[in-house]
Length: 192
Image 1 (cartoon, helix red, strand yellow):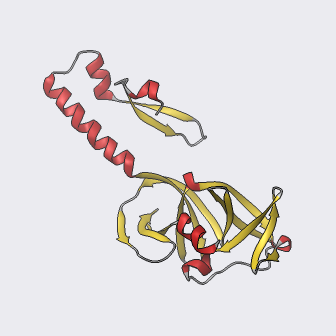
Image 2 (spheres, rainbow, N blue to C red):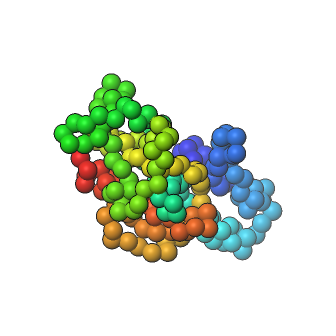
């Protein structure tokens, strides 16, 4: 929430609606407090509610969910993604022993996420288009190739299993299915 609205007690946050517009979330306890219709006990309860809501909001992440292989699911924090692209397989060239494509006036290295994570791929080679997640960090850009894009979700993340596997941060339940959260900075440092 912008700094101008953070201290206004009648708003508890913002949300993105189904049509993509941003909407303010009203805080009922804040409205009651502003109207002077609650007591000191109510104010204490409001503070507890705000603390609880803040902890819940911190656990929320907006994730791009992708598929690798027939059943594996991975998620990437949407804030880390520069762009989503579909790139024609015919554009792939080899430079320095790596797959690359010419992309927006640059040479974009491609990383097969299935290979990095050690998962079998189920890419349809008859389909000429590849799903590519473009990631940029410190003026380095890489294209992460996934088998398919499943969805973009905004939900709390409850860690079900921490992992030490290269390229993964943790495993969590996303949309009622176990999903590996991808560590893009780690993948970038490994592959470039």
